[in-house]
Image 1 (cartoon, rainbow, N blue to C red):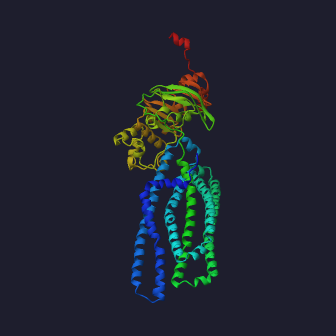
Image 2: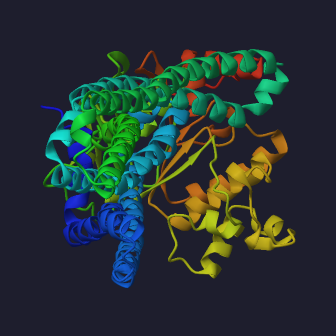
Image 3: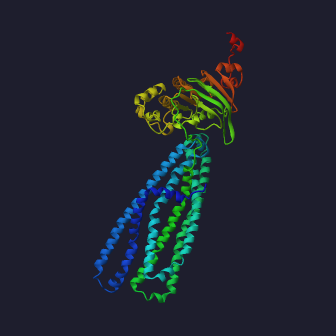
Amino acid sequence: MKKILPSKRVISYLKPHKRTLLFILITGIISSAIIPGAIWLGTPFIDKVIIGKDITILPKLSICILLIFGIGGLAAFFYKFYILQLAERIMMLVRNQLYEKFTRLSMDFYTKNQTGAMLSRATNDVQMLYHGLTRIEPIIKQPLLFLFLLGYAIYVDWFITVACLLALPVVGLIIYKIGRGIRRQAAKSQQQFGTLSNILSETFVGIRIIKAFRLEKERKRIFRRENGRLFRAMSRSAFLEGMSTPLLEFLTVMATVLFFNYMKGYLLAKTAGELISLGAALALLRQPLKSLNEINIYLQRSWAAADRIFEILDLTPSIEESKNAFDLPPIEGEVRFDKVAFKYDDQPILENISFTIKKGETIALVGSSGAGKSTLLNLLPRFYDVEKGSIKIDGIDVRLVTLKSLREQISYVSQEVFLFHDTIEKNISFGNRYKSFAEIEDAARMANIHEFILSLPNKYQTIVGDRGIRLSGGERQRVSIARAVLKDAPILMLDEATSSLDSESEKVVQEALDRLMSGRTTLVVAHRLSTIQQADRIIVLEGGSISEEGTHAQLLAKNGVYAKLYRLQFGREPEKTTYPSDKQEAEI
């Protein structure tokens, strides 16, 4: 697929605003005529009023000057206002599209990319693109000003004008070469901004670990190293920018000075007013060229930013609905994993996983770290897709239904609770905004958090802080359980929901979880075996495959992987329990 230039992509955002662009063009033409108009009036003013001492035309010249600056000034106001408003409107659309894309991208995108780098694209790169869009103002106005001044200079004397512009091709080539260099350095700078943003993001999130392990000097060294790389990239860009304007000015002035010295006799045939106005027009031609060079610098930076923005907007989520996806009807809650296999970056994680969870049944997944427990959990709501096999709910393959209807019928409580910087009420009702306050309170009661909330000064309107930092781990967990209760989905996933809690908090949270699990099809991942002993069935994963399956007592009797995990956690041999053989069961 042929890559579209960022300039063409940006222009595509302008197309729906044709009327506004037409108005901008008209006001740009009018406002650009102010300076050439003033120069044009300067010739009769010098020749007739100053030299000829004829003041009879002074009132007419004064009216013309007032009209030029009055109408031109009004046009300049509307010109700039509508350009800035248009730039803001486009950037609002780009920010919305970026945020929508970030929410649509699949989980594998977030596991492969740094948070800070993505934040940089959504903030720094967007701001750079905005600066480029605001350069539409001189992009239209400066070329028009150049053409008006050039037209007037040719009108006065085409020969002198053409001769003085001999340096123009060289100037154009320099602008092009310098612009390419600036764009390369801008791309490096913006990439480095992303690296710095990621370091800052990690520092803010992991500040406790940094302090606990005394990593301040190490993190400072890393930040200074990356900041130095950013400085070097910015310095190269600054060198090119600083060199460009003086060089262009020198070339244009040199060409003009050489011509005027060479053609001294030719100039004597002109009147004073013609010479002064022609000199003014030619001198002012440098300003549009200088502005166009500065515009080029801004645009090259903006195109580098646009490349990075459009790179995100062009990504395709790895998890997408099929073209004929339909809404999953209200479910009973039977879940079937059939010969499921999954790999990540060509690394096999799960292989040939098959089991069925009946309606209202609780299944626990246990195993050593890296066995694939959480991965298996993430396949059910299609955070990832299976490589082989299928997952069915009530006999319907989850890949055939819409993601919204699938995820609406699954509740999820994880170890890493995420609360938004908002009130407790909003955090409980998140995703369930049509629920009444009475329903929110009932959910909080079931989650064993209602009494605690009422003890707070602002009760349900208490702000929990960034990521819920103002609450303890157990309190945050119970708020997330209340959120799951309020959702009231028939399928529940618990991913090590109590593993990071102390014994007292675990007891309170476990009581809340028991209420939540009642009557729901539940899939539990747990390291603490004490929390899943009452599960209907326990599935033991080892090396990405099912090694054992049964109740707590049955697995202990087998004296296999589960019994070994039990001994490691509790430091004792499991109690021996005698079970009838299959033959004895048949006889009974």
